[in-house]
Length: 310
Length: 256
Image 1 (cartoon, each protein chain N blue to C red):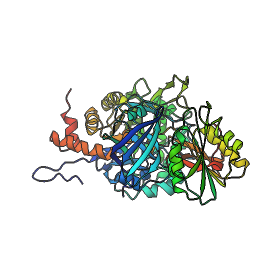
Image 2: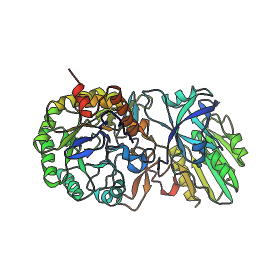
Image 3: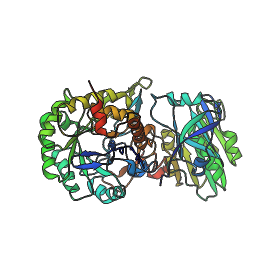
Image 4: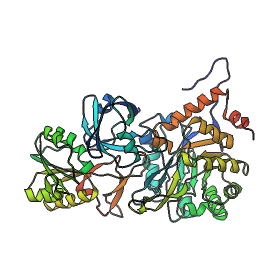
């Protein structure tokens, strides 16, 4: 749709992540997107890639409710990776995703290394273009964040999934660590093809009238525009620590936010909570990015990145 | 291909009809055309720090208008209460699986507090005899609208200030109100008690559930409830925003 041709050079939004070319850098943050429901509001072909909700080897029931709490400029969620399991996903959800002219990135959840590997193996030979390995969900007791907060564990998951998977793997990192660059370096060393960051920050909200935590799970993942400076800082740090591509996310609401992440070092981005504020946000943000690029006469994402000086 | 939308709708009326309860009438022909009873719309606050939409049940569906009746319960609804006619508000298409009106002789519509509004459109959609039993803490609202829709209205209040002193189920029993199908919307404790009552009298009931929502359109899986299914656990977490808000009372696992 955006053919900005003419006498000038064409605007190129494409980006290559581990050998997979995305038409543009906009992806959907895992857990905030459903092809069927989100696709009711905008054309999914507008996306660089769809990143699915986390899928485990078996169905997960998720956490009790309330699972959602709004906070000032952000929100908490404690969904707990409710999912129908990989077999159901491959049989019933993946075929639906294939109809769109965009890439498919399947977010993989697990409670053990074997869980992650089972899902990764089952996705070999499917239409999935890449896997995003979720070692950073703060809302599950076993697995999840336990793998993402220790370099050795993160490295081990990466190594094993890399061994069994025939697809490029993105490791999704948690910000709930002392030094995110350590974890990023550890997963890069074991063959991660890319990293995505940041997952949600662990947060909590107390209802002072009911004198109780708002979430049934007590704590949850903090997302939304309130966390953006933390995310930008971590992308900036990780960019200077590893050479693999980075998918940046955390509070992106506008096209200018995307440019900010690209300047910090992201190759692509994910839009998450913004799609709750505005169901067409991923498509709108892409168009805003184009406007931003036209304003400064950027022809590619690389030009945005290179324009940043410190 | 895009079946749903969010539009900027003009507010025709926004008026307090009981303490902390407002009626908002929106000019939204395309949304009204796709709406059915028991569905809800998402209203989006303008304040930047309140990110999430507020799901509001549809009270009445006009040719070109939608009538919403909402309670002021927090920051978002407080913002809505401050709007004047002529201003605009962002509103989504009608969402969810609403009431399925049945062809029955006598329908009993049971509402509690801010759960009463969707019963008005439901009453309008039904042709047989209909009885509305509505409960409030203190101050009733929407009585005339239900009567206009052809319902015989019974009122209960906790305080006894208006109508029967007590809850709706006590009122149903005291008045010997009966019917061959029940519909209900209100607080979970009321729905749970009503579902148990309907089971005891062997009468089906459709209940409209409420849960804290994230996206409000089925993407985030924040607002689930337990619905009986042939699984290991005996239930499945279903989305209140999409699979509901209306379910059969007999299929809900009422454990909380």
